[in-house]
Image (cartoon, rainbow, N blue to C red):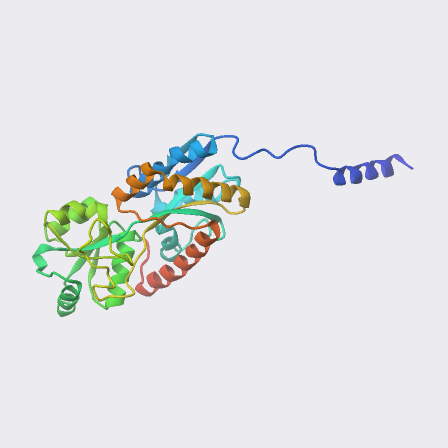
Length: 322
């Protein structure tokens, strides 16, 4: 046998030999959570609420890093392009399902480039109106809006935000004609509606609760399928006469696509335990968040449904980012 033939045979035998190098156990170093929104946002708060419990469960530090910008797409891009090893995760909101419809081109595919890990919760929104409108129910509001087409306006926390999408869904389902006025965030939405310069809007309950309780805003309905514990006397949007206008503002954890299923399942289990802890449950309850227990496979299916339904809604409404 010649030297060349011997070398080829040796290489072939090595290829089929048992591997002696053990795979690195997960996790063996710190885990990073990217939040594509500003510190103090509800997405950021929920990410940080579970980070310590996740660190305890994994036995490694968990670092939360904010990467805001471009409607959450900057931080999401970083995660999509990260190694699929479970060491870089994203905590995103329902805007993740909105962005493909309002941006002409994204640097990632919202489905194919991510693996769902687990939802952290759903935050019901409340429909509120200015006291100056003199309406006490959704039916009264719709009648008023249809009697004054194009005269009423609604505020949002920006194009493509949950508050915008929620109001657009309500507008499309009811057929009212109202003008959109995007603002910087929730505080401006509340103050402008109290002042009567905007007429109605949708916000996470925690952001509007104080003004509702002291009578500066009128709550007409909550966007969830069931009543909110913090506003038990306020009907759901379906109970108020507008079935089909429900909106879920969910927040959840994603990993890069191709992350090993064993790693995704480990993260799902540890985060599920974190969400059941008394401390986290109390924090989320204070935000008005409701649990959304799901397996990774269920969360992937839910995101597919969200991308399809919200995409169709926003394209029909002609909503595009500036």
